[in-house]
Image (cartoon, rainbow, N blue to C red; front, side):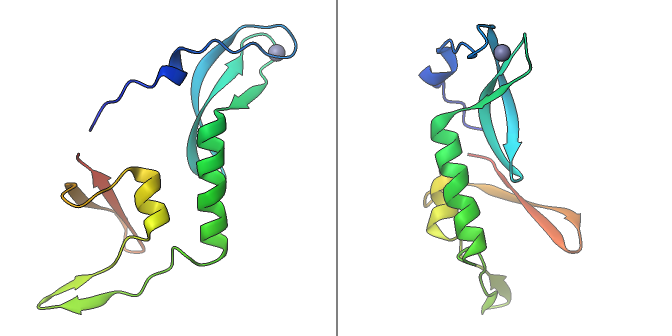
Length: 113
Ligand SMILES: [Zn+2]
């Protein structure tokens, strides 16, 4: 995995209630987003950049922009990665990825770097 230090992780966010917050990783519509959680009232604040990206992905899923058709190339099958998804995951030509399997209906791709 590529590890980048995000300066946003160092930002101290204060909850409207006045409580301190800690960094969390959470999900919005099953899309991973970073955020902060108030230690006092439990309120979750989403990272604005991640929230924006997650909204774009949710919209793309809704508009079926992430639905692709599997094609044949030689003896293998291939599928394209829609640009919005590639951007979201930071993929580029030459990125190494591993196939994995959650179930017959759910194949997963692990981005190695
Ligand atoms: Zn609070």
